[in-house]
Image (cartoon, rainbow, N blue to C red; front, top):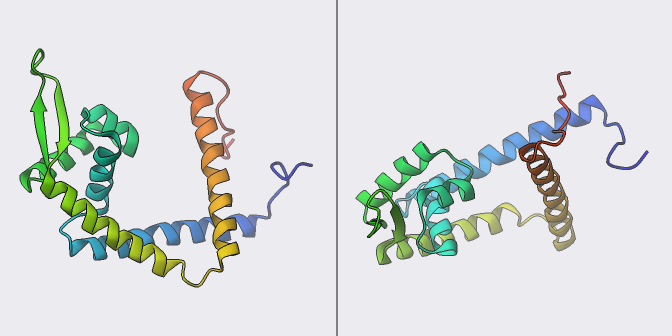
Length: 166
C-alpha cells in the first residue's frame, strides 16, 4: 500500500481534525486581535494583499483569490472604501465595470497589518525547530496541492474526491 492509501486509525483522524480546527481558529482569533490595532480585520487584510499582488482589478478577481462570494467582496469593498483604503473606478466604456484600486492609505494599512501578521506568525511558530517548521510547511503544502488537484478534477467534470459518507 502506498503512503497515500495507507489506512489511518480513526483516533488519528479525530486528533488531526481537532488540531487543524483549533489551530485555524486560534490563529485567526489572535490575528484579528492584533489587527484591531491597525483597524483591519483578517479578511480586509487579505483583500488589500490581493490588490497589492494583482494591482487594480475587478471584484471577480478578488473573489477567486480569496475564495469568497461576490456579496462578501462587495461588503468588504464597501467597508474598505468607507475608510478610504480602496477606491472604485468605473469603466470608461462600460460604467457597469468597476475596478478596485488600493489607495496610499490602504497601502499604509496593509504595511502595518502585514507587519503585525508577520510578528504573530513568528511568535506562533517560535517553539518549532527550523526542521520542524520546514516539515510542517511541506506537509501542509502537500495537503493543499491534493485539494487543489481534486477541485480541478471536479471542475473539469472528472471524478471528484470520494464521499466519506458513502
